[in-house]
Length: 158
Length: 157
Image: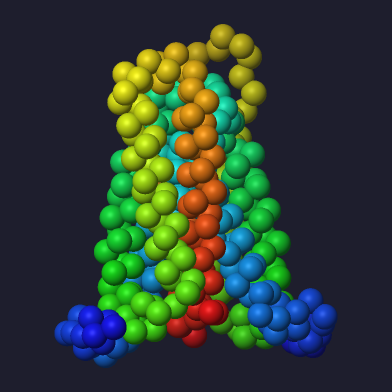
């Protein structure tokens, strides 16, 4: 708790909380990063589930840079927003649920990467995802959209 | 401004004021719609501009239904949120800017659509988007980022 109190009274925490532009600016970046992350990971997960099957599965990894940029933007902007009111955020159950959902989404993304994007020699047959892989993709969508809902509801729920 | 006052006194506005979870629910819906709308537009525009070339241009333009679903979700949830706070939102500078950017983004999308129809979309098959289509894609990225930014700023201005 001492750390959280130090964090929100630090120069960064005060800057985000008290300047006119701090909070809205990082919220805006957080929203744009969200669209990048959900757009790219969403399409990869849907492709694994069979949507747009004409897209070569392995090639959907070209979307990963967009996912990483979105994730990085959101890790940074999210951390800065957190510093503005660290004690309240840390004690919020809704915030904690959001963090759990992001960790689960991250684990699923790593698992999917192993199963779908593992380096295949040129000319090898296209990857056909099994039931387990599809299950990972479906739960990923639930985790990421769940994280959006929890994030929006931090302001309203305990 | 009588319209705004009237809107704020309608049954819908009163319902949103009295049922505690309704406003957060519409806001959450607005964020899910935003993810579909802006996420889809990002993928399409970036693909037109040359990102992820190994994914066919035709398939990526085929993501437009997601954009439409997101757009409809956000028109509905956005209108409901607006009715609740019509006098505040209707005179909010950031909101008026947001609506301006939305209209511009809409006109830009129409121009894009027209360009696809006029050319018979040969360039879609050939994966060679003409220069003016790339300009529409760049403008679309910029305009939608402005919509998100001004929308987010409404609470602070």
